[in-house]
Image (cartoon, rainbow, N blue to C red; front, side):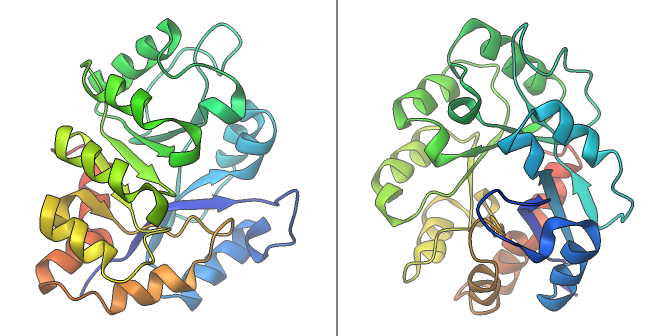
Length: 235
C-alpha cells in the first residue's frame, strides 16, 4: 500500500482567510478527507508572526500523523542556536528579513547539513542566483523547493540539472505533465508530494498524485517514499 506524505502543510489560522486547518482537529480531518497518511507541518504563527511562538505551538501537537517542522531564523535576532532534533525545517528569509547568503545563514546551513536536516524553501523567498550560490558552496543541506509553478520551470530545470542537492515539491506543479517531465528527466527521487495547503489548493495536487503517468515505483516515491527517506535522514 502506497504511503502518502504531504511534505508542505501549514497548521493554524491565516491572517487573510478562515481555514479548516486552523487547529489540529481540522487539519487531521482534511488529511482523512484527502487520504493523506501524514503531513509535515509548520505553524502559521511561525511565518506570519514570531517564529519562536509558532515553533512553541508545534510542541503542543499531539497527533503523530502531524510531523512538526520548525521555522528557523539565523543570527543574534533569530530563533537561537540550532539544537537539532528535527529532520526538516523551513526557512523564510524574505518574509523574516535576513540574507540567505549572509554569514549567519551560512553558519546555520552548515549546521543543518552536518546534522542531516533538510530544508523547505519557497521559491518566492529566494532568487535563482542565490540558490546557485547556496548549492555550489558546500556544506549545504538538501533543499526542497516549494511553490515553483510554471513561470519558474526554466530556472528550476537549470538548478536541478546543476545541483543534485535540490529537490522540488508538487504543490504548484499543476501544468500538463510537469511532474512527469521533471521525474523522467531528473529522477523521481527528487520530487516530493506537497500541497502547500491551506495557502494553496490541496485537492489538485492530491488528484494529480492519483493520475501520474509514471511507473508505479516512481509514483510511490513521489507519494511518500522520498519524504520518508528525507525524514529518516537517509541519502
